[in-house]
Length: 244
Image 1 (cartoon, rainbow, N blue to C red):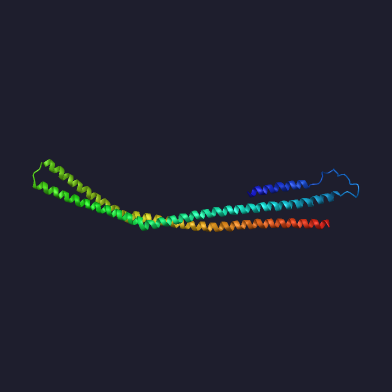
Image 2 (cartoon, rainbow, N blue to C red):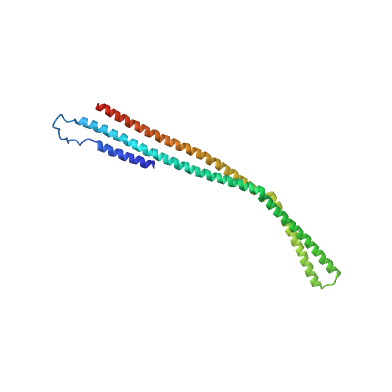
């Protein structure tokens, strides 16, 4: 927005300068009936004084616009920084909550769930072992068709092997979960919480910096306005003094 204000000021100053120029060379004003007409030098000096005063008045107007612009920009920057700070603080709170929930509930829940699955797998091995023993004892005591006997015993042995394989898998999963997966997830949550904490602190610092920058901008604009007003008043006083 500043370039637009400056461009407007320059354009208006140019119009004032054009308006303050005396009559073209060779042209004379109609003489008055009484008294001697003002000299061209006097006309030119008067036009310059008037032009100078108008330019100073224009500077005051422009300075007032720039002060208004600085105040608007200050409000916008402050609002933007406040929103960013609130969002960063919210992200920090969520990251801290996620880490606390993991440590208090999720971590223990996953361990307990893996241990339960391991116990179920151990029970499956025990059941399959007992069932195969019963089958072997039964087929050893009684006479059955060889094909039927082999089919039943083979199925029992396969069930036992699968139960042992499931038990081994559950044991390895529990070890992997406790030794690697959960610590890795916890470290990731810790890093996220630390990063969110750092960003929240940076956002607060930026908010303070934006507030200071905005105040400085407004103060500079106020100073420029006061200086322009002072120059205009001095020019008016000097003009009044010359008239006297």
